[in-house]
Image (tube, rainbow, N blue to C red; front, side):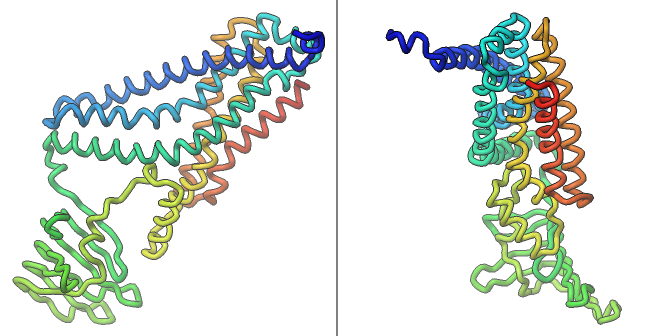
Length: 373
């Protein structure tokens, strides 16, 4: 080793970075594994009754649990980061190592810079993982769970009801058989005119879509027609009749993803569909903002955890656990409240989602400046 390398201050900074980061990474990975395991045990216990009652192969239960692992891992990243940063920095402070570093001319910010950069990296990683893996696996998990529930054989699994708005009216469908393109158990349609009044109502025992003719054949039909004053002009009972309706069979067969299963582009498409149908879509706008806002918590908790750890004198583990529970709980309560208000249209979606992360980020900056770290 040359004389310049031996006394190069950058060399010692690199050693410090490796030392601090290695201690943090071991703690973070252990915490992440432990919290994910706790959530997995909770998921198994919540579904144990269904698993045991289902007549389907245990393979579906195993796959359901596997497909939930990415969601759980991402969910525990913020508390895992918070605890790990607070614990490691607290240990360094309790052992006077942090004081020694600052006495040597290394600022607190420079000391924890690798942890902050890792928090920034986790923000991006969580965002990409959510979009490319978690939401896709959520769909797979929902599919496996539906198979498990069908194996239970409860009455509710035998009836499927769909209430949906079409281009010119409203449909009330009980069960759709995709291979046969046929509605069974009940098919009801209310045609709406330009004044948003009912023009006619069709109520049938079953309905079959004719692909070639692009029509619906309704069986055991009751047809009720109204005038402009909503007075009944005719009431007919028809054994079978063919109707031209705006929607085809695939309109009912297309699986509808939940909000948690849609990525950024799926949400945009669903917003356009709901706009065209005159349906509320605030929950979709909230979810689009949350795609970017929720991962930001990974960076926020690292900053707050580092500041909190710098004031830990002893019992770093207990103090870190307490601070983590307090901050994460407060964060999720505030975020969930804002999200609920946004989904119900009480406040703008952007405000509902971004208020809490921005508030906590500003609070962490204020603490940094307040204590002159």
